[in-house]
Amino acid sequence: MLKNKYLRKIKRRVYSQALKDEAVQLSYKRDNVKELADELGIQVQRLYKWRKMAKKNVTPKIPLILEVQDNSEITKST
Image (tube, rainbow, N blue to C red):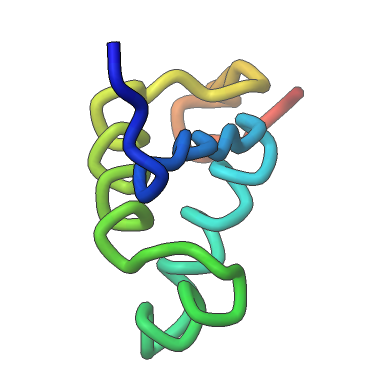
């Protein structure tokens, strides 16, 4: 088998879930998603993909419990 000297093994970048979550949250707060992607050193398409995946996995990390008091007011408790 011949090896081509121009072929290189491409290193696959692995991003932690915490980084993905934070990047997604920041992307919704920023006006310019491309600037954010440039700051993070990732492709814009990757950031949009993470946003799409985050929408599909809508599971809050801390469960939100609503309590109704006197049927007039709803308050949050954690």
